Length: 288
Length: 239
Image (cartoon, rainbow over all chains, first blue to last red; front, side, top):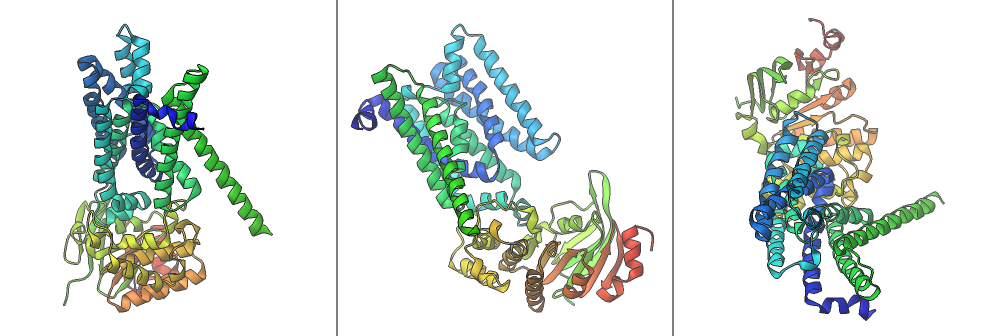
């Protein structure tokens, strides 16, 4: 047990990976609750694909140091575009999102394909390098987490009302575009924070699954949030431990980021089973 | 005499170039309850949205408490149809009612003890004090409608706008809604209630405005909801 759960984290790069995942768990756990109640799953997925070309352009122009600025610019552009597109009503939301997603993703791939190290670069941009997380990256993630959690914490009642009853929210004088923009920026910032470690694609799991699992177990916002954060943290810890043990002891190389995502999905399935079991038990009791 | 709570003066409201409401005039004074009666698509919801400042008025004027609709929002409460809200949303009845206090609490601040007390009192006023902790979506349609009215009561508005509050509502909840609306009227709150249920329009309101793209009649309920005027409004012919 010790060999699986404790020993992997005596290695510095594993400790940094764990710290990064715990920060992302906190961030993703909280943001996913808003993604859930606003039904922004597809919007979040679009953002994961649009930040990708920003990462590529940043890397092409300034190397590793350019990744964060590139991702930030792409995230800001995406958040503004999404807010404008979904408000204009010119095209249906789904169409606008699909066009944006495919267009930006294609742009990213075209840009990467011009490099000789095409395949390995693409892998790194899409799936991150979790075990290569630096202390500087940890600080970046912590800074993003502080900003996003601060904004969402301060505006949670306004965002909650907007999600539950948009017409009354507007009737009370809350500006829908401002609340939407802040939430879209928050989602985009999570993608930015996770771009180098988990990658721009797998981060969708962190933006959707934690709260979805929490919602299966409770209908109280605080419990959903805490359960979501706990599930994501547990997945980060468990996924890292399993992938480390598999590669070091058994020589089976498991991609650590993807293993974390699979553990998170596993926890979601457990929550799903638990919720269907308990509702069935309730049905039996109610019917008796 | 004091200015009316709501003054709609020859207002025209258009959606995407087509006029939904043309030349509408209606006045609502403090303590008056006006039924907005008309068939589906008559523009009842549009008129309510214009009063909330959510759709622009193309011609004429809408004045709320002597101000523009946007400037009067703090004193206006809106009650949507309960079935337009997601029943799976993770929120309790008490939390829904507390939303009525958000503007008073202000941006960034949490509602305080006084807000919670006002919310509890409002929930009691619609007869649902014992369901405070129940999830909104687990309540019956009528109970959900009462929770939404409680939220509006917690806002302590001077003008209350209700969009089809009696639709699909059981008789117990209808009575509870009527009692709560009556209590508000005695406190001097002005109210506009859109409905196509004539019996409830008679029970809940003292005045009526018969609408179908334009006004077919406005005044005391008994003088407006007559067979002739109703027939004209529902068939859309000139009266």
